[in-house]
Amino acid sequence: MSTNKNILSSDVEIKGSLKFSNDLIIDGKIEGEVTSDGCLTVGENACVTGEIRTKSVTIFGKVRGNITVTERCELKNSAVLEGDIVAGTLAIEEGATFMGKSSVGKSAVAAAQKAKDA
Image (tube, rainbow, N blue to C red; front, side, top):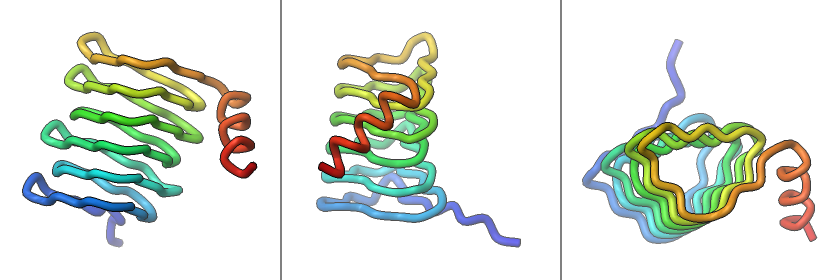
């Protein structure tokens, strides 16, 4: 049985939109929108500049942009986020840096989805 985890290593740089299924671990640099119905992990060496729309996200590195997830957003102690969060649930570890506003709960996710579809 194979695992469906894809990895973008620290020497990878992408400019443009990124779409994936299942799970993705980013440890490189992304400039542009990241979209998926899967789970995203932003590694410690990663730098994402742009909007993230996934099922769930775990951040160890840097993100400059808004995050919209239908399930869970987790900011680890090494995370730096400059942007707003819309998430079903939100977990922020001590030491994480978060500059923005958050809307948490099923109603926040539903409102964000409705605004996107409009």
